Length: 237
Image 1: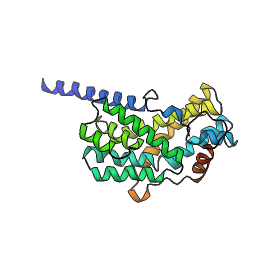
Image 2: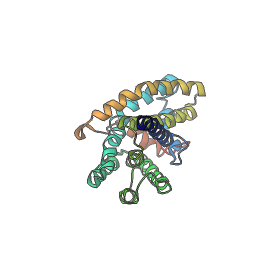
Image 3: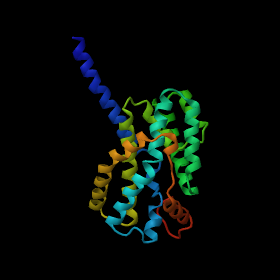
Image 4: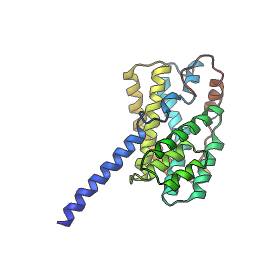
């Protein structure tokens, strides 16, 4: 009799973890991710991105060259730090994110989304009071706030990173649909290609040591800085 009880509890725990990750990855999470294009709108304005193919290649490059080597790698290291209450390590990772944002818009984005997710955490039972207090003391960035929210789900580390990456992909595809502009079917084709590459990006991020983590994307930084002065725009970055 005890064995069946354990078997029934295990799928329930997996389902709970999965639902929490889906919640964190959802564009409906009130943290403002939908309002940013991360330089894509500037790329459209400068005619670097004008078609579905352009947008798909741009986002695949951003996934591989930027997200996998910076945010995903940071989240991969921050989740274990939250789980073992390593406050110094958490502070170091948060400072690294702030220091490596290459434009004022990109820094403002991670700070705004970090603060918004912190407020979300205050209204849920996902994080403890000491964890929330530590995050609030850090000028929280989005990767560190997400890592805290994900750290208590009980989900495997790889699954947490898959959720982070897919949430990013959904927001960026919506930005492409609005700014290029593209139709919904084109957006779904792009999302399908991103989803196929996300597991490789996550595995790369999981394998990165501290000295290999980096956020060097010169053209993205230039376009982000240009976006700050762009005459007409839909997005905040």
